[in-house]
Image (cartoon, rainbow, N blue to C red; front, side):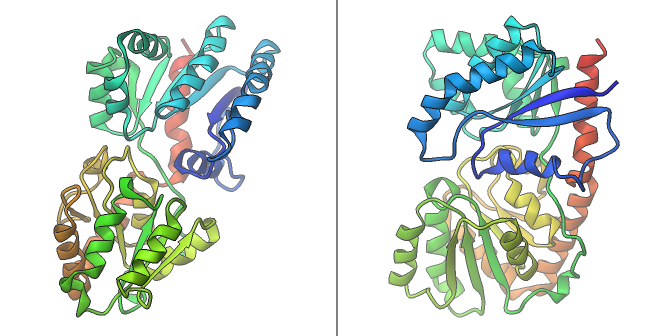
Amino acid sequence: MRMNILILVPGQEGGIDRLFQNLNMGDIQHDSEMKYTLFRTHEKRGRLLLSAFLLPFRLLKFLYLLLVGQVDLCHINLSVRGSTLRKILFATICRITRTPYVIHLHGGHYREFFSDLPSPLKAIVRSFFQNAAKVIVLGGVWKEFVVKNIGISDKDVMIVPNAVIGPDVFTDIPNKEMPPHILFLGRVGDGKGVPELMKAFASQRLSSLSWSATLAGDGEVEKYKREIKQLGLDDRVAITGWVGPKEVANLLIRSSILALPSHAENLPLSMLEGMAYGLAPVVTPVGAVEDVINDGENGLLIPVGDADALAGALADLIKNPEKRNKLAHNARHTFEQGYDIKDYGEKLDKVYGAILTL
């Protein structure tokens, strides 16, 4: 008998939505007894009033699906602030209808968010977590957090790292575009380390070298377009704004270095996408990144907020193609070992099966 899994996704252009859209694609579906259905909990960024207006209707629709027996298990994807408040409401409906639910923690700032909550709200969030059948986290640092800070039993926390779609045909790493192209994928702003990236691009270490770069993502796009022009980098650095999957794939194919100097992350999909396409990662040791990247082996780790270290790492890889190719080759191998979306469904099935067979 096939089990119906309802997956709550935010419905916005971001990592969580992209991950489960990829999983739900027909050509990715694996041989499984689980049927996945996506349920959007709110609107895209910038539509706060519309999301608030529609929330009661979404809750009623959710209640209906659970009451008519179309759902065996709910998979609740969770981030900070409004995401947590909304998901507590959905989880309450699960408890009323006796439908088991899984919490899947994604928010890179969740430790700070939880720490800053007043005691009554902390108690509500703890109850939300503790009533989950299982809690899925993306790495060891997050397992330690939910066990120590939220009080979840070690046996009820399962590590399932993020996964991405790799290229249909993998391009040999030495055949990447020359001079080296640096790629940033993510929300353009302070939290992703874009100010440090601008300083690195404008530094003397990079000024005499041959390279180009693209920043792809939404956020403060116009602000940084102006800064690039002011710095005289508009002949080297392009900002595209948000781009779709095909455009992202084209950028990944032609790039050699993935730069993501984030201040906080859980486990960034853009880093894994870079690894899948044979880019050498230059990243910060935040969230579960260190579960994946070993400094000097399959990428370079630089301190958070250190523009000089970022410039040095980028210059090193631009000047040393052998080192760049070695890191890229090892990054691609790491992707193949555990971060391919083709294996992701089976990992989720194990979580769901452990719950539904109880």
